[in-house]
Length: 115
Length: 448
Ligand code: SF4
Ligand code: SF4
Image (cartoon, rainbow over all chains, first blue to last red; front, side, top):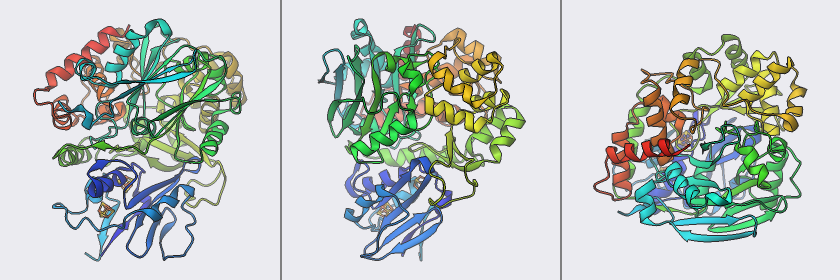
């Protein structure tokens, strides 16, 4: 099972990112989340990446891509780099109502694949 | 009361005359009196009123999980009205300021030379701005992000119009326009303040049960009046904005974006230098412009100019689009190049007037001129409550840091539900909707 992103439905509201930090750390902050919003603002190019156990999911507007260790992050902007230091998505397995990022997203962008 | 759940507890006082930054504690007293946003801004404005203050304030709920809690508020004397104006700043800028560790920033006096204020991780620096003074907004934002090595730096920034202290100037949010229809761009310029740059990687505590309550309210909003609607286009269509302008907009829509935690995406990105459907990032370096001001867009279209390119010029020069359109019309020029000249000569002729809902705007202005007409004068998707209700609900949004456009679009955001969120977030048991409304009303009556 893994978190899935439909990048073109995303509006960039970033609340999934803050919700994920809350799941890991019980605070409001953008720095401890497994899911991260990235943005090339002048081009309005944005998407989400998810740090998984052994890979990185890039939810880019031109399509999803899974990166394995050692592969370069490209097409995700320079703001993407810190994701490599983050904790991996645990699918919120200890949360009563399931993944908090999915609960928080107002646009139904996120889902669990293989559930 | 445990308001430190939603605040950092710090006020920054920037003295531009002396080039110093000092901090003060955000007291419980101040929060009880003014709650936050425009409420506390006004108290700080009064405290420092001999020093020509510009106050930037977070709302009590800004950056929390409360739906649409994305805004801060700027408070200063408006060169357009000669009175106190409160201007919400949103997109990602309101949240960023709170996460820098400073809840309120009081900017006093005038800098002897052009500067930018850099807020990050609980630190504040007054940095020289000689490298960007005279540059347009887009080039300046690029430079600032490069200088601080982070493309997520958020800025409140002015262009040449603000530097020239023109009342038609607008404070911009990064590359784009803002809710500033009060000429606060000229206030920045008069202070020799080119920008406030912010990067916030701080954190706030969350009260038990707060997240779930916020999710319930968000779900109610998503299933309510805004259901099935998106973007600036739908707002414009519901308000009766000129169909030709809307159809022109439709041909350029790339994506609809939302500000932090907002359940309705009213920031519409228009692409005109490459096909709107282009989704990769290989194409044009500057493919288009983000537009959140449907009145400004339609008014620019009515001058006969290409509205998207004209809007971009307004953003680059830091000009308020609706007033710019009025000035162009007066000159009889629909030429985009004329906009550049307004950066040196653009005087606002009062608060800019919407091309639709004129009566309701007049009725609101008879009550107050302190709030922003970046927000439509009437509700597009639900029963409108009239001018009094508009003012009362907007004022509540300005205290709590709720996006004022979402406050208008979503009647589900009631004062009662917002008061319950405040009570929970701040562990403030006896906080009620009546207290909220009373403080909001006081802000309106005192903002003259
Ligand atoms: S499922 Fe949970 S851990 Fe994974 S990204 Fe979403 S919030 Fe974070
Ligand atoms: S919450 Fe949803 S819409 Fe908002 S940034 Fe995350 S995925 Fe995109």
